[in-house]
Image (cartoon, rainbow, N blue to C red; front, side, top):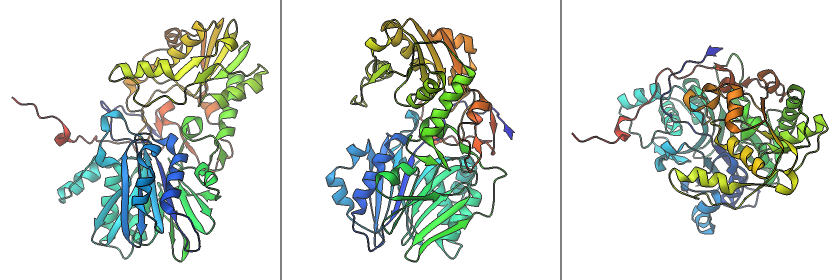
Length: 483
């Protein structure tokens, strides 16, 4: 295990996204662009900044991608523009505000000496700076600071010296460090590949005679397909006219390390990741919370939506009734307020305490995490204003104390409230009567039976893979100060 070294002063290139790919069998009758749009609806929770689809129709690539939600980007006119084909890849993107770069929207389509490629990825390349410097010294020209562009260049470079695309991707996997689960559309095949540690999820399904590769199994279910299995850490899968093929990277990790926060918050509850139901993992987290923090109360409720299942687990284990404490506004616009006022107005309009349920009661409120403490403070205040006699906050994960280098938007220690204040001080700051977190040992029990190991570096500061030693700084993207 590599101990945390604090080297981040600013946010780095770091996305949490969702990917989808489909290889359409000639015997199946569906529009590939429409199917990919439906799939991206199932991945919308993994990214709301931009959405994109590339369709390969007999080696003619057509792409539509833009900032916005899937429903905003892909109206019927956009689907008509994409047309039909036999291979498609799709992407939904999350990005920190500082890195909102149109050129980084995915899929990225690249035309090079061996043909065209379209690639969509989820994760963060930890040797980004080193690889980019090498490529720039070789004359490479970059349009963005995205991980996926680095991946494309490495694959294209390897393809120029290998016999086929499969070998090029395998060689690229040997060079790319960090987290990536990606789908790639070549001229005649669909490829999915996952880093050797398996930080981010990727799975395989079938729809009639067609194959699907995507971030989460819930997408396969929503399309009416059959879940086959997860892509293994360090595995590349290929679908072409001859069928399904599997290859393994030559370099293996000492231990696999899927991000355990996928079970706590990121993934949809109806997904199964590496052999474990996300719903069951969250429910168990709630049961373990009761074992570690038994509290006398009148009602247990969860913060919509991510805290609800853990709250139900706590209620079952404790025997305290589960009830609805909040009503969530599901139709709130994404652009409520502007500038510094935006977050404040979003907090005010997103949730409303259900006064009839909480007034005069001792309430246990369960949430998935506390990052900066602003949301937790607001939630406690809502319950107080609605007449709650006591408010006890429980968190179904340990305190965040370290950055994530493998795809989560947790970039520096200074922004994390648990690094600046003790648990008692945080409890006072958010205004709760008590505050409890799930322990590290408890967290590592929520996904028992998984066929991979886990990364909990953001909670422990111990990482299962090398973290960046140098930080890429795009000097040309900064404003030039005139003297």
